[in-house]
Image (cartoon, rainbow, N blue to C red; front, side):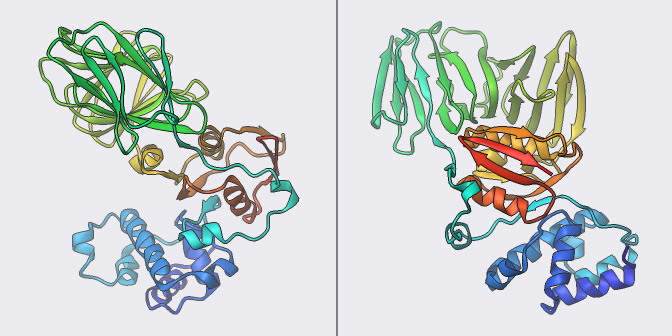
Length: 382
């Protein structure tokens, strides 16, 4: 329990750069952003502390409902004079995203992390209409195949691109699939771009010529930036639902080990159909499909598209959901002891290019759970 006056004094000290380590740790923990061990605070540069300060300020502004333009004319600590009293600290699981030096200059790993796991990488398998399979991480840049006037090539950045000749016809289908620890990007024949997350697949026509609609099938998770074409609707089939768009950006998570199929709109408009029900959502909204029951909510988009940006943004996510995200990227299995609570909430962010042991070690320091890593299995205990 802390009084408003005391809290404001801590915040004022923070803004003046005079906050103690204990006061900094309080602010980071309360606003669900960071829980930084004292030894890490000693190593932080001025730039890193400023970055953290800015993140805290953005969160504070959201909490008190003030626009950044209006708020910019007042010192942050004064803006909170009208805010409600701070009554409790939120306990959770917070990661610290820092510079490469802190992520790479790690102390010698303990025996429980002797079998460390490297992060995933760009890679996928392309299955052509004739059944041929191309391991894209091994394929050279340039032309990969020519399918009835449709040329498939690999760009210098690894992206798969389709070039259609005048003679190209529709009907043939290709499938791009990723395994655990893989992610990939493809530019479809109509110019739409799709980012595939780990353990996912996308099946699509090698050419959309002579087709009345642009229909693709998805399993797993993908971020789609759809090229506009009002006369040819773009439809994504996944699970027992369809998402219809004309030109937009959105994310679909349809992993079978999640509780629902989640469609999140970033830009434009989409219509989700399932079991005779349908919902049209706006940017910032997510529709969750559970047994064809569609529920629309507002979400933190950053926690949805983090994987596409090369990060884990876990702010406010249930701990076990966060661990499922880690498991798919690091290709590990997670086993929980019965002593681990179901209601732990995660938060913060960290690069997806981090060794798994670095993340697990950071979590352990908070004292909420313990880990043991062996043979690509993460054992979690209280």
